[in-house]
Image (cartoon, rainbow, N blue to C red; front, top):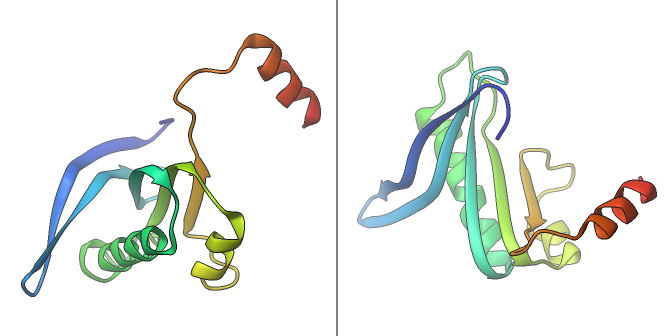
Length: 119
C-alpha cells in the first residue's frame, strides 16, 4: 500500500438504524492523517457502487473521523468501469473518491514498457 498505512478492518460492519453494511477494507494513513476506504467489485462499476462508497466515506467523515484528521479517501476497484458513469455519479471536483479498473493478471514486460513510454 505504501508508507504510513495501518490496517483497521476487513468487512467492517456499519449499522445504520436497522440496516447493516460491510465495508470491504478500512485503512488509516498516518502520514495523510485520514481513513482510506477500499471497496472491491468483481463486476463492471455501477452508479450504485459509487453511491455505496460515497455513503461509507460520509459515515467515516461524520462518525469516525476526529476533528484534527483529514477527510476520508474512498477507493473503488472494479473489473471494468465507465468513466462517464463515475463522472455523473459524483459531485463535480470530487477529490475524495477514486474509481479504478484492476487487472487479474500481471502485464507482460513489453506491455509495461509501452505504458511507461506513453507517460
